[in-house]
View 1 (cartoon, rainbow, N blue to C red):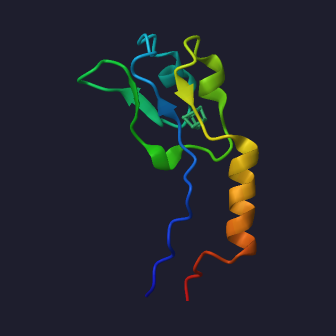
View 2: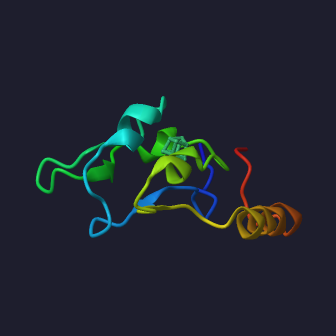
Length: 93
Ligand code: SF4
């Protein structure tokens, strides 16, 4: 059985550890268990990237430090449209 390839780019938050002040609001806010405390830095980090909801950017909006970045929505959607239109994906067969 052939497995489908992962479609790139992925929709994921990126946390700037230098801007993060460890208030952890984002971890409590996200109901998808995407984020967690990094035990080494004690700052927010991505733990379960597969749970992130495509085109959600809620955690970035609640961060007072602007420490969470997500892809630009319009560019991401255009990229996905290009993948689909160009059939740059494989179907399980
Ligand atoms: S973008 Fe949405 S689903 Fe993903 S970590 Fe942030 S709040 Fe959670």
